[in-house]
Image 1 (cartoon, helix red, strand yellow):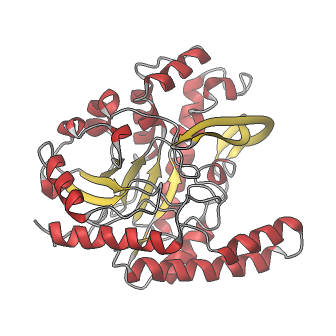
Image 2: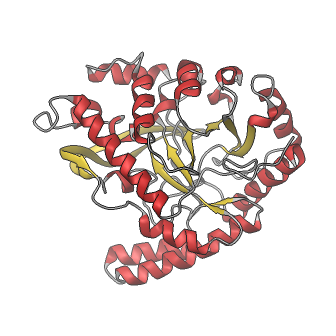
Length: 373
């Protein structure tokens, strides 16, 4: 086996990391009006420098800013697209964990005007990350175009603005394509599109929920999303590596959906124009590895075998055995290893400590080195 020097890397991670207490305190003070935007920015800068060092010292070849400047992994991006704003209506997502259920609540989005890009979203954040890394490749994570549509569906789109939904998708993917182009100009060579919809659609309950909205062809919705992601990436800069991450929800150590990848696998792996797939595989909710039989040559699969839902450290021999099991369906040389999701998809974070997070990242690196090094 050969160690990889191009993304996705043999030992990689999804993106978000636990916010340090000092940063959370600064955010609270900013919300209360006791500090200004400049002071908050200084606190974010300090935290990002520290977390980049943490990733590089763990031996990771990619580094993110931990998504420290965001409240959530996707809404901070979506609301900076022109034509999309939050409403007074609340978006509720039901999550589950070993102790019971809880809900994530956020302002529901509304497409009220023509969708377009007027600024390079997260440009300042990426430039700071780019200038901070020493040994790692700077990696930017953004939500995929599907996430603009999945929760509210067509009902969240103003009929007077987009009587033709194809026009909506054309404008949305054009805005994304321009974002990707601009990121390339800033020196971004590793971009990840986070997409829960392509994993959620494996869950019959999620498909039933969509069918209840009316006007949704749930049997082919994933194919529609794949086509539009490809449109967003159609002119991506040469040399930019693009991956997608799919999980079944990650909020305060809880999940929203279940089911293996079989329902979407053939179209997903054979048609989505990305270089690698970050797949959640940390417990039985994700099913087995058989759907990987559809992965073509030239694509990497990053096995999310290390959970971010709790701090208990996985057994290294068990991780190696599961990598071997996945190797029965896709060549070992096309596999990599990572945690199954971010450690803090929202500012709240999952139920583990910074030290436990660090140990899990180190375990990913050590295991990958022993398998592929």
